[in-house]
Each structure stands twice: as C-alpha cells, then as structure tokens.
Length: 623
Image (cartoon, rainbow, N blue to C red; front, side, top):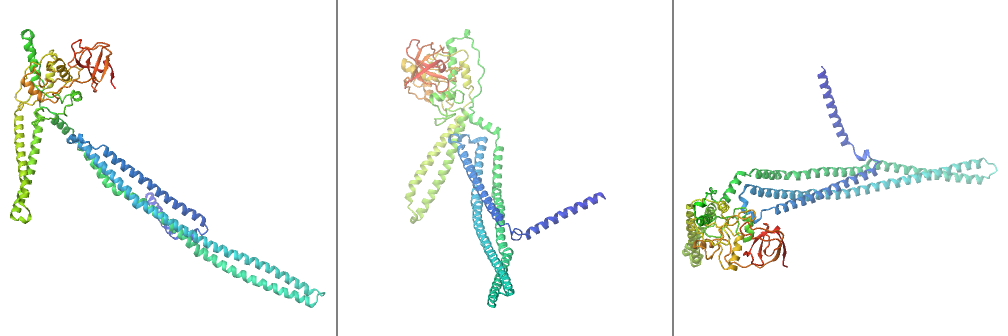
C-alpha cells in the first residue's frame, strides 16, 4: 500500500511539474513587453543596449580565437617544416622509426590545415554574421527608441494642453462666481441705479459665458487627452515595446545560432582530426625494432669474421727477424677498412675519407664483401631498369620511323634516324655495363669470407711486437688479385702524415705497418704504406693506388708555436716525446680528438714532427 501510495504521489508530482512548465511556456508566449512593461521604457532601452554589447563581445571573442587558431596553424606548419628530414638524412628513410616520424610530420601538417579551416570558417560564417546582426540590431533599436520618444512627446504635449485648458477653466469659473456675487450684491443694493445694476448683470453674463467656453475647452482637451493616452498605452507604445522585444529576441536567437554554428565548425573537422590521430597512432605502431635492427645489420655488416686466437710465438725457437716479418705479413695481408670503427670519426677529420662504406672505385672492391655485393646488386638493378626504359624508347622510335616511311606526309624518317642511332648506342653501352657489373658480382660472390677483422690486426700489433715508424717497410703483402678480394686498406692515421713529411725531409721512405691502438692515440690499426715508396714491393704500390688519401705530400707551414707544460713520453705511433718547457712549432691544431700536431724546432732527438696531447702544451697561434 505504501509503495502504491508513493508511486501515485510521484506520478502526481511529475504531472504537476509538467503542467506548470506548460503553463509557464504558454504564459511566456502570451506575455509581451508592450502590456507587461508599459511603464519600463527606460529600463528596456538599457537592457537592449547591453544585449547588443554582449553580442559585440562575443564577436570580439571569436576574432581573438580566430587569431589564435591562425597562429597555432602557422606555428604547426613551421614546426613540421623545421623537422623535415634533411637531404643528407634520406639514407635513413629505410628505418621504420624514421618512416613513422615522417608520417607523424605529415599528420601534424594535416592537423595544421584543419585548424586553418576552422579559422577561415569562423571568420567567414560566424564573425561576419555576428557583425551584420549587431549592426542591424543597433539600427532597429535606434529607430524604435526614436519612435517611442516621438509618441511620448505627443502625449506630453497633449497633457500640457489639457493642463492649460484646465487652468483656464478654473480661472474663468472663479471669475464667473465673482461676477455673480457682484451682481447679486448690486441688485440688492437700493442705492444703485438701474443702469449700474444692468452693467453688473452684463459682466456676470460675460463671465459666465467665458466660464462655459473654458469648461467646454477643458472637456474637449480632456477627451482628446484620454483618447490619446488610451491609444498611447494600448496601441502605440506597446507596438514600439513589442518591436524592441522582437529585436531582443532576434539578438538572443542569433546568439544561440552563432554559438551552435561555431561548435558545428569545430565538429565538421573533428572526423578529419580523428583520422589524423589514427594516422599518428598507426605510424607509431608501425615501428618495428627487430626490423630496424636487421636493417642496421644489413647496412653495416662487413662480412668479416671475428679475430681468431693469437698464437703463442716462442722467440727462443724462432728467428726474431722472421717472427717480426710474420707479424708484418699478418697485419698487412688483410687490407681491412677501419671506416666502420669508432676511431674512423677522428681519422675523417684528418684526411677527409668518404662516408661509411662509401666507394670511389667502379667495382666497389674497396668495400667489405657484403657491402660490395649490395652495391653491385643495386647497380645491376639500376642498369636493368635503364635498359628496359631505353628499350621502350627505341621501340617507339622504330614504330615512328616505320609510320614516317609508310606516309611521308606525317614526317621525315631521317629525323628519327639520328635519335634511333643514339638510342641504340645508349642501349649497347648499358648492356655492356650490365655485363661488366654482373661479372663483378660473380667475382664478389666467389670471394671467400675474410678470416680476420681490423680488430685482429690490432690485437696482433698489441701482442708485444710494435714496429718502429722509422723502420723500412720490407714486409710483403700476401693477397690475391684485387678483383678477387676486396681491397679495404685503412685510411690515413696520424703516423701517415708524419711519415710523408719525414720522407720529404729525410730523403728516405718509411712504411707504417700498423698504427698504435693505445688510448693515447685514439686510432685504430691501419695499413699505411704510401704509394711510390722505394722500399715497398710492387704489391704495396698497387695497394697504395687504391687508398683514399692524396699521393702528393706537401710540407705544412706552422700555424703557431707552443710550449710544453709537462714532460711527455711518446708511447704510441704518431706521437713524439717532449720535455717540460720545450718550444715546438704547431703544424695542425686540435681537431677535437685531444691531439695537436707539432714540429720540433731543432732536430736534436731525431724526431721531425708528430702528435702531442693538447692538454700538455700552451699554444700561441699566429695572426
């Protein structure tokens, strides 16, 4: 029972609220400013002015928002432009992370475009409409207020006329009353003559007539005033106030439509923005760390095998010279590139070698085996594509020539003959190149995998047998023909440039069969036999022709001088000792690796020039 009673009460309450809301809506529809606010003309004028000011404020808000949207879109586009990959970074486009970042930039650029769409739509659709509505409302309001003021002025004028007629009537009535009293007194006065009594009577009659005329005028003005006042408050003024009401409702309705319109502009680009977000998420999910790892391996894999164990050499059972020569042979037999090692960055500053696994040879024989095969395969694919394109061009020219020969009015066949010959020549050259590179690839595929790496040569040098950089390079290079094995001779180390200068100054040849791998030099092991060396073998000269550095050596002029702050013992290849306080010439300043190339001013210790730690000296450069 209680539950049924509660549910009944609840339904009754909800029905009452619904009825109240309907009655309120009906009453609001029946209510108007003309009837309900007939005496609030001033307040309504203030209210409508404030409403139009609020509309203008909304327009200013939209303008500021448009400016922000435009600025935001512009900054997004500049951001995308600033972070676009540079041309030198195009080789990294194969990595999924780089591709994802490029896709991210594209989606952010699309987002900037959508913000520009929002800005333009708000400017053209919303702000223009708000501005026009505000201008129209102000003009209509001004006209309504002017009409209301005219009606009020007419009513005020009529009330003034009524008040003036009333005052005239009151004065005439008082004068008539006085005239009647004067006549009555004169008529009762026996001392007055008949003529005098008649005069008083005429005055009374005149005053009474004036009173009646004033009364009639007052009555007439009162009727006019009542009619005008009734018409003013029942028709004229309500009409003006209702126009103000319509104006204010138009402003309110426009306010609603413009706010909804601004939201619609934003909503219209929301699906595109959502797709941009989906694209960004898809770009992020496309990143595959395993695939990138594989591509790094594929790009930088040299094909060398790790170094084998270093054999023990019992010097008591072997000839020291033969042992040393065997070390020379081991270190020089593997002409392995060091461009993939950490020390390559330092070497690149000194001698300007090419990028990692770059090549300046036609058959790429100066690259590691894997990289050489990749380069050759890419070259073959490029040539195959070019042959296909050139074949299509030749076939087109041949068809054109046949058509011209069949109908000479279409063209002269001889004009196509030269182009056809040129195409045939290009095609023949491409086929020759293709056959040549296929031969290179076949040879490269037959090359056995190297049994040692640059690290192996470095270990061999660190096994207690370091050769002097002033010793003659008598070791032979044990390798096959350059076409059968990649010639990956290392780049120049510091000792190379020193030996070059020493050769010029001392008139004899010095071969470096390995450079220091100590922490002081920061350089990897490299074979640095220079071309044209008198002591080297023919194979060494052949190898020297394949290196990256220049064969002509120029004596460097000093760029300053320095003084040794601390004594330094030369414990690595390419460095020279110095004593505290010794003055030296600066040949090459520090390139960021912590070493400065110097030359001894005198030749007291038999050293010409080399590298010393930059922190051990105080330099003064020439202007």
